[in-house]
Image 1 (spheres, helix red, strand yellow):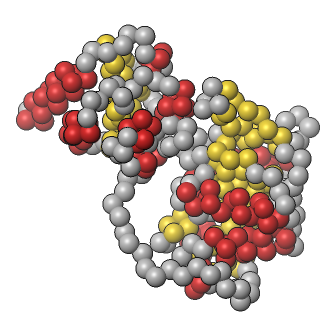
Image 2: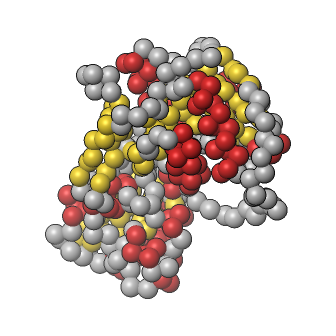
Image 3: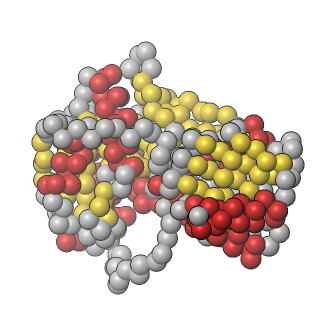
Length: 328
């Protein structure tokens, strides 16, 4: 059919494509132009309209492959793996990229194992060297160093963190080909979806304002101050890893190398010392405001504005002033 393109798995759930796919298409466009190959997208699911495929084309794809079947309506790691292996065998991509989302982190290793390829996880950049080889860049040792990894097997497979790549411009003048593929799903994966329970969650990666807390908080109940401040600013609450480990906040609220990567317009860090692990997840913030009682805290090295003080004094004053401004 085709060969040697850069393939992007475009995560699709409840009628929407995860934005990480568009970021990956932008990077794939750069890679493909260097290598002189095409960019491909693939969507797996049920009742996938051509409008969804066209969105991938608008963001850089030349061709979009669709696997549409009732049994693919909900994520099944076995069936999804099988259809992606089928696609790899058909089109022989040179590069295959996944978003490092919970779904992507579950699916990519299964595909890699099935086709006998290597996989580099949680990349923050994909580069092409002077020889045309793919170099995968990822933090190592909790962000203290960057590892540059060259994979010799094909396809080169990577999961890439959300919001570390630049979102490309949406170009509705772009044209491409939409290809619907059939695959026999006779195999029983052994997984049954009995129902889905919606839970209220937060997507830190998309937040414009993040108000985060760390070890400086003395007890779980005190995080209510962060929530009040975040509500006044129209932001969301994040935390450093120690508060997640303590069980004070769910892991979806964690900012850092092993949590979420965020790029808000404003990042406020209260009682966060600034370990490399944490900084790796928020370094891309436009404006960083740090409040810490320790003047030597590493967070001050990357902060645009720093306050040496007790968060228990600073946050209430901020809340008081914001309320006064809102009252006019």
